View (tube, rainbow, N blue to C red):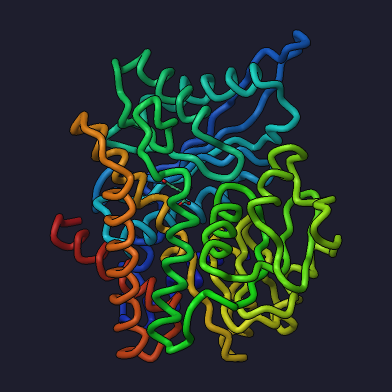
Length: 410
Ligand code: GLU
């Protein structure tokens, strides 16, 4: 299955429970618009570099389309379609007035100098500026993109359309970004878990053991919030290596190490372990927080965690999802767990449109409310329909998008 087929497999599983007709299913999974562009730039050595960029706009029934930009060699049409459709379902799960989109460039940003990265970003905006916009499609950070890149997007788009901070979210706070956006996804991940633990009578984060795959924006903030609450993060991996410590890794010191060396590898306060060792660690909660497709049929039966907290997008393949469900492992799904990022993106966009700025306490309180309400809705569906959290999330999302579609008229 391609990444897009995998998302649609989950969609269909929920659609069957809802008795959706095949025609409606087909309409809801089909992307609204798919754009593929040539992003050619002059490299610093005078040579020409040609890269391929994508923006997939999946659905705009519930509002302007929303979703990140990923700069990674794995970016292709199927991955962008998958991630764009996940944004449609994610914004619906947390009930934001948005549709879904996603895009990016097939590139390893580490192979570029900072000036080349800026040229690449600006060139991409030149190629897609007429299909994005504050009321049309609003990009944001994703894998390997950051507030500086969002600032360049805002600046380049504004050259064509006039001053437009609301065209992109995840901007630096000094340039119309929102307080709390940087930490929002990680914060939401931990709140999602806390809602589930309380509901299931499983106690608190304190004393529980965690393995986290990924130490970028999402993984590192999730680790900090878990550590703050007394959780023990005993295994962490990133693209360059993995580390483990029986009693729990000292996260604040690790953050300093990563700021200097750009990897968790070689952290003096822990032992080196294999990347697969992170996924299979003896923990209560496994947190995939990097790329998609890492929990597969090959490793699902050996995962020892009782809870999988999907901080990454699409980390679990359908085959693995079935195995985990069969083994009684609770999978809390991406379109709920990592929705804190896009939720605070929504607050940022709303602040930009009103030319007003919120205090961080207000951002966090509103984020907490959205995560709590989303959990309560999912938990009701889990109980009433006797389905997994993932199927419940799709049922809620499909219901909201489907009703909006019918009300607007096809
Ligand atoms: N890239 C993030 C996601 O996958 C954030 C998207 C946004 O803020 O628009 O949800």
